[in-house]
Image 1: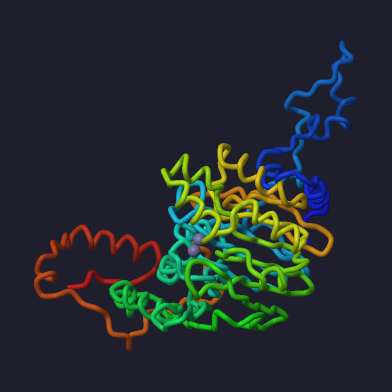
Image 2 (image 1 turned 135 degrees about the horizontal axis):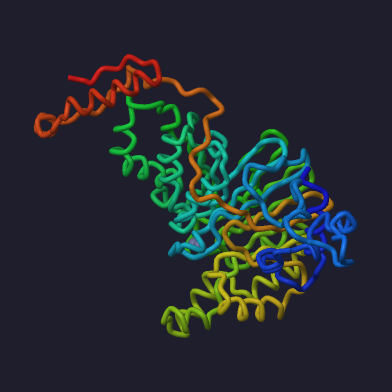
Length: 436
Ligand SMILES: [Zn+2]
Ligand SMILES: [Zn+2]
């Protein structure tokens, strides 16, 4: 369970109905009214000649402060009945430093982790959560727009060299023709990555260099596609620009997580996502912003912003009728000059609890509370060690080799390399020789 003090503060934040949770969290860098421990120390800090308390450095605390409204990845125990949802991509198809495209990480108190969509730019957000890649091997794709699966190759191949030694499992919908289905996309991705994958074979531990794909019918309603370890994941059809899109519903220990991927408001979402604990639904940028900032014509802005996607006003209506404990809007550039129009439109139809998502927003969900914070991210992190020991490259695997021309073009500084090899051998007790 997370720390009780922060949980209470989170609850207060959520109870502030009508506020934007994301903004509360992002902006409320809560500071104590006076330095912690100052009260107890006042007496001892009084100087002999004055009644003024001395609040100088000697009165500062030396213990950890557990009331900060920040999530530090890898530092918190997840309670046995707790769900943590991390926004690893909340923006638009063109990833930008502030926002990658769609990606949501769900971590459960039973140890399970799931990725829903993995849009362009999201791989680096995922890595920032400091989770061993072996545990990031289940990806559920809502549809095959690149802003929803554009970084799958980065997770697939990057994961191999970052110590994932299990295959990557991918679930995704079919479509009206096999060539538009997830299986076809994954087959094509493996072909695209032939150079990448084949050149790693025999050179490193490549047990993770395999895909396991489960394609399911996009048009099945409330279709169970995953059931294991107390977790059930179902799909409902989503209505976007073409057949082959789904939304996901994950249920575990009485908690209900719903994720739309991309969809126009639809009857299946309205029926099956009622009373969710956390309901993450696309909320496209307001049409006026497309016109003003991206030179869309009004016709194009209204088409994309209200017909292919869910507009903010429609998002509000969906949430007003499905009544989640917390509504989360994503799929827009979340800026000071876009939020006013989005909020204006959402609040025309919905007055419930709301978060306007940003990358690195973290939601801790339990039966009693939903706490929303931002993660503090370390940019210099390295991949985490594999929980399964790495093995040497499999000698049976065929290694790619350089052609005669490439071999003969190499300039080998043997004396320099011998020094490197000797240093390593000395330091690590190995006995490696510079190849001839
Ligand atoms: Zn889409
Ligand atoms: Zn999208």
